[in-house]
Length: 429
Image (cartoon, rainbow, N blue to C red; front, side):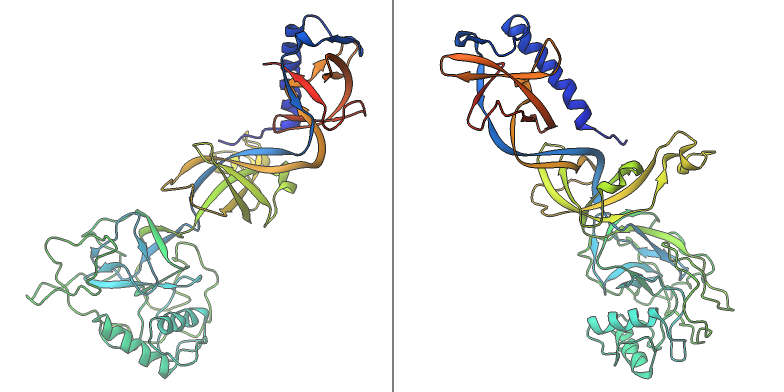
């Protein structure tokens, strides 16, 4: 999956092939500076100053970043699911259980407890209040305290959703995920049971089914026969004073924050990602000096087009053997240690609809600015060792020894003083 191309090593081999070709074309090895008839020359190219860049090349994948699951903690029957590829924005329905919506709100800390007046202060309260304020339901001061003003805002929000107006938010009613979310995969089935531990839906009494957010423009699936439901009773007992959970897992299933009561087990419903296109790649740990947050990168798309980007995340060192059964640490299972990189593209114009597409990522190893350079094909091997180029001077061609420098981008840096800017060197056609 991963490859490293050490251009400074590979290019001299290409130069030797070019040297052999030139020697064959011109017949025999070059002499040390003797003029030769111009009639033998092939094509020529101007000696000019260039910026040469030697790059490491990695295999990468173009996709979407920040993968996070959406969990059901309510229990019951899944009655609405979005389609894969849909984008759900904060304040909108992410999925529905027993005909009632689970709402997406922006937040980095997953929901882990019921929220009501008297609950201990916490980041989850701030996330809720911030989400309510963004939707136009003023909770008062946006902070970490669930106040009477917060409860009043929750009741207005619940009324708009046609939920029981309790002023409390049960665990599972809100899914905190960072920003708008793209549905990468639907992991549950419409009509299946959500989180275990919830009560079974009541028998249908003929009343109209509850489908909050009747706007299905996100492309969700609605069952042909509505699932009967009765209003859900929201738990009103405040969560224990325990502050924040000991840690938040990415799947949002990090327990009940010390709650003494039973809660519904989390069930994965959706796999979501951010809406931002990014490239991911693995860099050999030995080359970790090449990548820092902010480092420029060049991404080569499958059609050959190049897009500039920057590294926005550098992960911790892992090895291929970490994911292999029985693999030892430090690559004992045969895997080289690597660093996962995330790269954001400067422009998406050339990307189109590509998703999970293989790309090449190029990172700068060495850069030389304003150096004299000739095509690698212009190099010829000298019989006594070293390299030379054939310079066209008037009606004659002179073989001139050179000292090669950096090989990159199909050119080689030349030094030695015998080749000057503006000279023309012979290259095979």
